[in-house]
View 1 (cartoon, rainbow, N blue to C red):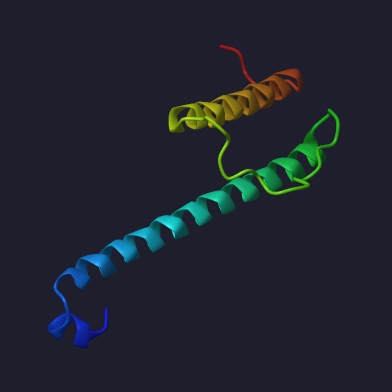
View 2 (tube, rainbow, N blue to C red):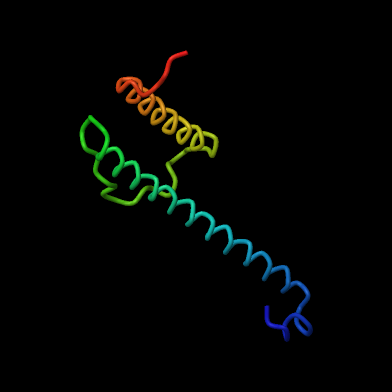
Length: 104
């Protein structure tokens, strides 16, 4: 907010500037989160193709949808948790098959 508007402008302008800043920060945060998803997929693709025994995975051919239709935030979170758990189970299974896990 320019100082001229702060000191001599309408008092409600300060609130509008603050809300605009919060919205810009929220958008930036969402963009960084999405970038993290792309980075995670790229790493999974590279590591899976280098060390995996199954079929080779390709990197995403098109952008991820910004939001799935009729999906609540809880459902989106659960989907990510399920994907991470499946990845962990596959990793543990692969390590067990290779004899890398000690059983107590």
